[in-house]
Length: 284
Image (cartoon, rainbow, N blue to C red; front, side, top):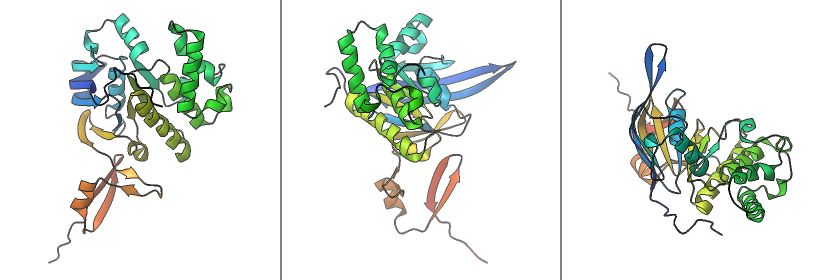
């Protein structure tokens, strides 16, 4: 059963970055992490941000999550212009609107609390009754497939189970956006797939927007859309290919049509798969 509330309009713009620059000062030098980034993300959309190390992926998460401020340009999330919020208002914004899933499992869960207690922890700061909190915790653990692990401590879970528990924690207050930083980096393929399924369930059941930074092209293929970052700029934005049950890459229909009947060559470069028609060899 869908848990999306009536005031949620799936598909409307929830996150908007316009001409965003982020410059960090290192000694007496300014280093540009982002150089004029512009893109929108819809409510309920699952997007992946890919690119090599140092391309600006983490800077985007920090700006959308209110952990940092843009040097220039605007960052709007759920109707809030984050550049106009005070530090106190940004703290409230993060608490009410943003969920975080970090790469290291140790950063996501309190080790001496059970899975259910970890999920309940963000709810303790609200005025919800104990019964309401208990029902919310149960529904979230059902969504991420951990209902039978509710009373376990984090160390009793596999890495994939810990990350799915982290997704439940991130969703506890029904945030508008969940930001995930390399959530499958330390997991095997099966565990990573289950984490990605939990993200897709969050989009479908709660209308949550998920923005995931990743080097994993197979993980990115599970998103609705992929943004390609290079040197602090958006270089590519498109519907991704997908990986079928046999492990083969399936490209979008328009790409397949353009390449039909051609001999193809595939190149891996800077974390990106490039498929193109084989160049004709000329002799003489």
